[in-house]
Length: 231
Length: 231
Image (cartoon, rainbow over all chains, first blue to last red; front, side):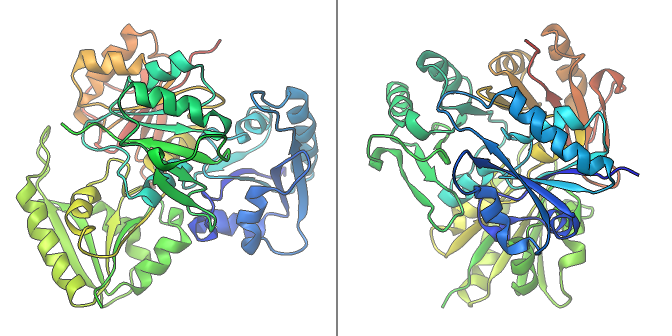
C-alpha cells in the first residue's frame, strides 16, 4: 500500500480559517511538506503552526524567490522524488499550501509530477481572493457580472486589456508592481474605487483605499480589488 | 450594546470544508439566518446541519427562484428588518452562505442594508470555484495566467467575448444554460478540454469531461472549468 498525497489548502493567513478537513489531515499525516524561501521562514508553516503535532517528518521545499522568475523545474523534480520515497513507503504526505492549492499555487508542480503515480487528493482552502474581499467589506462579484483575476507582473498594456475585460477585477501578486498597476487603473479611471489589501486576515494585515497607499513596492502578498463601476 | 452581524461562508458542500472560525461562530450565535427557495429545503442549512446546536432562532430567507430574475429588493428589505430587530436587541446573527459570502452570494443584499448600521464581519469560506478545481484535479490558474469567472446566463456573444479574454475560465451558474455554453466553447475550440463539475464536494457530486455530458439543463450548482490552452 502506497501513501496518499494531499494538497492541503490551509487558508489565507488566520489560523482559524483552516477547514476541519485540512485540520484532520494535518493532524494525522506522518509527513508534511511546505514551501519556504531560499533563506527564511515558511509563511504557510507559520499559518499551520498551531495545528501541527510534534514529531512529524517535515520537508522544507526551498524555492529560490527571484523577482520575475519561477523556480526551475529541477527543484520540483528533486522534491517530488523525496516525497515519492515517503509515499512509496506507505506514508501519507500533506503538502501545505497558502490559501488554496490550485489558485496560483506552487502545489501544481508537485501535483503534475506525483498525481499520475500516487493516490492524490486536493483539499480546497479559503483563497486570498475571497479573504481579501471579506477584509475589505467589498463583494467580489454579483449577479451576472464577470470577475477577472490578473497577476500584476503582466506587461502594462496586457494588464490594461485584461482589467477592461470584466466588470470586476482583482490584481494579485502586487509586490513591486504597485506603481505600474496604479498607473493602469488611473488611466482606466478606476483608481479611486480600488481597494488595497495587504496580508488579508493576518495580524499584520492592512486594508486601505489604493489612493491612500504610498508609491513603491508592496509585499508580495497584497492584492488590489477593483469593484464594478456603478451603473 | 447591539449584536454583531456575521456573513458566514460555510463552504461548497462537504460539511468538513467549513472553517474553524465559521464553526465557532455558528455554535455561539443565538440567531442564524439562511436562504431557501420559495418552497423547499435550504441547501446551506443542510451543509451546516451537523454543526448547528439545538435551540437557535432560525430565520428562513425565502427567495423566489425565478429563472433569469433576481429576488425583488423588498424581499431583502423585509428580512433585513427582521434581522435588524435581533441585532438591535443585542443578539448576534449569523447569516449562512454557501461557499463564500462575497463570491456571487446573496449575502451582499443584507450586507448593504445592515453593515452601515451594525458591526458586521464577513467570514470567508471555501468557494465553489476552488472546490470545483480540486474535485476535477485541475489547477485553476498559475504563474502569470489570468482567470475569468463568467456567469452562464449572459447573452451568447458576451459569453464568447468574456471567455476569450483570459487564459483560463470558469463558467458558473450553468443550470439551464448548458447547451448555450457548450455551443460557445465549441466555437472557441475549447470544448474538448473543458471539465464539467456538478455539486463539487457533495456526496451527489459528479466530475466529467464536458464532451461527455448529455444536452439539456444541468443543476444550478454546476460549473465548467476551461483550462488554459497548452502552449
